[in-house]
Length: 172
Image (cartoon, rainbow, N blue to C red; front, side):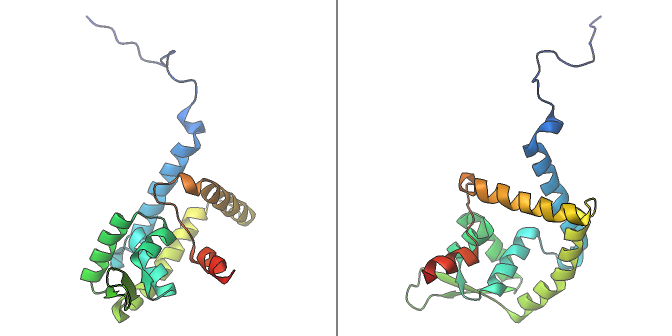
């Protein structure tokens, strides 16, 4: 008979997974997606589709590459996201008047309507995510989160560059 000893392996890592920030960041991302999808279920919009709709709604005529950098996705992923939004009649691509290789993005009227429909659910999802924190903790948490993301942005396979950052550099 084989005996199996149940318990901790003494040769295993000395660090508990519960003490690893990456573990909790991944779990929070899973939770964020689940809550977003639950709150916006009727629209059939995913978090990345919402981000794309939001960015294009905020800056009509943005090109695909700039959109990808703005929301932190690689260009091939954002291309398929745009394909899905375009097939649903929410977004359209138009050739740039001076460079036909560049595609400029705009929301359709249906895309604008869906973006407005998603917003209340998106806001409820954010509120639910932060609900365990006291109001003063929420502000500190968001400041820390922004610091971590900005401080590690260059390590991403798809670094983001906020629209405001590009506008500030162009103004110089």
